[in-house]
Image (tube, rainbow, N blue to C red; front, side):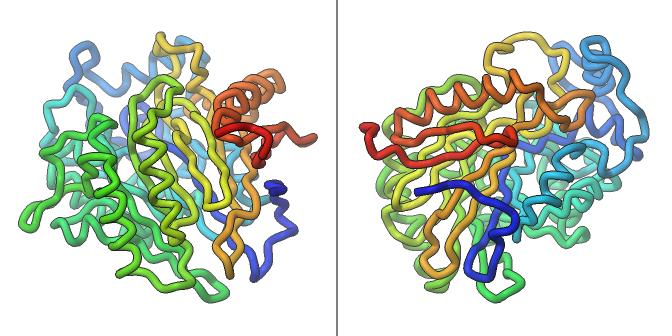
Length: 384
């Protein structure tokens, strides 16, 4: 499989998706945008979101205040313009609310509804909401998040006013006919509280309680009932710990059970603060951990060897008729001053080597192209 994509290859026979990991626009990032929330926090060691701004500035230099809606995306906007994806899908790991009804869980992310127009600045089409931060400000915060996305005409999946709404997929029509259908789940392995699960009578998220064959088959049965034969299906899963490259056997088996159903093209995994292995196989694509895309971690010490400051844009090309993966291009960027910027050549080499090391365990190679992009391809000589 040649996994290289080029913007000129876009056609009615190919669907191109942009995917990324955790988009964390709350706390410090919210404070540098035009209309921030109350900065008060309820963390053990930090009482104001402005403290995260000061930490970043101490480490890297001044950050503008009252920044525009497009500021945080920086160089990513040029890449999106070049790639021209049909749809743009992110994991939004931030509540959009001014609610003060915080969950006593140590870390709480929120951004103001007025600042949520930064999502429109990047023309985001769909937000996966099943994760361990979208309910940080209680039911009121979750409902305001969903109403803010509706106001911006951005689809969402993975949360709702009840279990039926939380479990429902986002239906994304394509311009030239056809649909992409996105399901969103939060696994308890990501630290998502079990009590956040939506019920018949209570708002919450679409919680995945285990990674068993039974759960996987429940998901594929739901997809068979919901979807048309020609739908392209993406399953977005918030799973696993924040740090570390290990992919346990249960996680991999779960992903393959989903793909082997023949109805799913992409497993969009996230939760890890750094990029993890990619597995490209005949039955589809597994992104085990896309890493953080935007966060306010500059200046926070610890875990530097994982290079969580490096962000990845995943551009996935899918054949419309067969729903097969035609190519995966990966564009490395870096977070600096709460903005996505071009990385140094050494950064690109580092992330290529690390991703290749981890992905080759699953029969996938990651190579660097001449234009500092990364390409994924199946290496049939590797033993998965």
